[in-house]
Image (cartoon, rainbow, N blue to C red; front, side, top):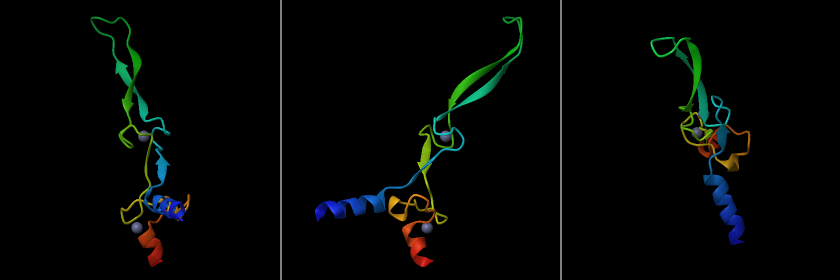
Length: 90
Ligand SMILES: [Zn+2]
Ligand SMILES: [Zn+2]
């Protein structure tokens, strides 16, 4: 029986991760950097620079949060948007 209980606790404590919409789960974003022409460059061009996504801090996903600020955990089901406490209130 111990195994089942462990699984239940894990589901209650593991937050659902939402793929980051800003970097579509990659963790980095490509920014356009405008390089005008100058003394060392004949022609201006647009460069791209890869930066770490600020929304997810480079993880590509983040914890789904309930309106109250608590993480929504796996026990609530994949499409849940409320934490255990708020679901109990409803
Ligand atoms: Zn991101
Ligand atoms: Zn909540």
